[in-house]
Image (cartoon, rainbow, N blue to C red; front, side, top):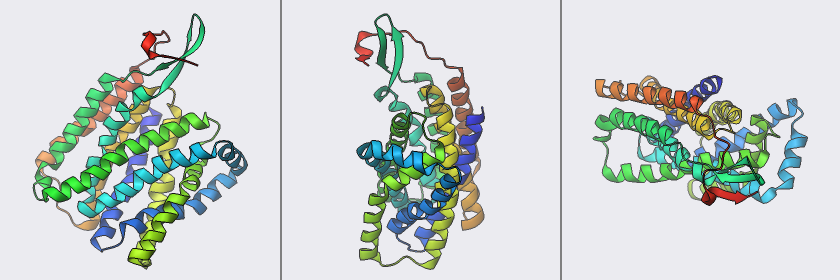
Length: 327
């Protein structure tokens, strides 16, 4: 259960992103600067953390060995995750973005068949395609149903066009984040800790953020002092603390896709933290009774997902010739 606790703690610090990004959008700040500044500010912070553990050398050695894959999966896992998520904050409140982001619970489960596990067979080790945890998917849908109930009353006040424009980038982000994270875990093979991996992915995705910031400078000008300050808070809270906690949690269960899906499901609590943050800081009205019913569904689905994930054990046998790929 420790991994679940780390996941919930990460959700709290991730929620800061949704609240502050919405706060910035309400002031007319550029979403491109909000996205790129977070990762630019993360670099010196993470460099200090990793350097204190003498981890820079092993990290750079690892990155040099497979440059193209580091670039690809870092841009997918960070660039195609955070840029669309920040863009979506232009079209809805933080709680709506956080709520829609929970699609990643289902997205992460749907990605399971695209990964393989090595098992022992009569003819030696084989790689078989992982099976989708259908029970976990069912509980993921319970979580999403709860989020939908929470947001019914609020969504009625929004224009349909804004809802659609806000949803599609989040759907992209919901697949990009778990895909990039899992591919990087496979690539690193346990040789790097969570902070080394976060720093490595931040450095590898730097070309993406530099291009985005140059375009922002050309079209929007320099960011304001307030945007820079809030971006530093986001970089520390979400980029360093939350990402480090979440990667540490996923590292602990990386060899069990059901448990991994359960850890990813803890991010549903971001909705709760985002609502509390916007009520407190941005003056939104407190959730209605209907929203509280949805909240209970979210928490209940998350708990069930967690329990099922920790109860699942993988079978070492090979189930079908169609699932086998020569190692």
